[in-house]
Image (cartoon, rainbow, N blue to C red; front, side, top):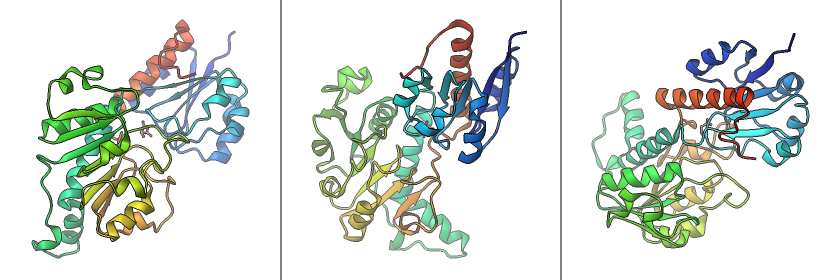
Length: 325
Ligand code: MLT
């Protein structure tokens, strides 16, 4: 009798994906949500494969304990929580589901943009506390005709750029991979309201709003720092829907308090889950969400179906779709 392929799911996966995996005869599925690191270290050696999101950190020490592991599937985009070079030395394949949640993350970016320029969460919180304020406190800005700097033109950055142009914004994009719009998207190439520049500085200089869509690596930590924030238009805004630490939270707070920025919006934080209280959460001009960029029913279904199809392809047909190493 051949032994079963044991698959661990640590951070949850939409039921549509779990059900498909459970129906594969020789797969054994273990769904352990929010598995603490100590418990994971104890059990990881029992599994042939795992599916994670960003809440599970797979360091070299953890991967070293995964002696049976052949495949790690990151059900999402960012892989900064997985030591891929170390996994490679152990001949463990690492996959992500790159584009499956891009639309959700791009829409979250735009939701944060509207929320921060129109003070919607602040007004909602005041109403919940029983106060009605239609005065200047919540006077906002229109976005039509304003300039949006999009740093990073991967799947998410490109969708943000396209939708922002559709909303009447001028978009200045930067990505080291591209020098002209026609290289990334024919629709963006056809509009005068989108252009690509060759540095972050050129993208941010004079822009009203900056949004960042790059992976977290040692080179992108602190990418949006005090010097770059200072290049924005006065009373500008910064949005981070990528990874915590790419935008320097303290530099942004200082720029708001100094009057340079009018506000900021963060979906991601340097430390997740964070400790409380945090200066960004308490700041009256900063809008925050708890890393919900990919949290739509549609995106999580797409992510789950992509993750399980890649996993089945790997074990049943030797396919390597989505492999990053
Ligand atoms: C991603 O990288 O895909 C998102 O941040 C969402 C997640 O952690 O799953």
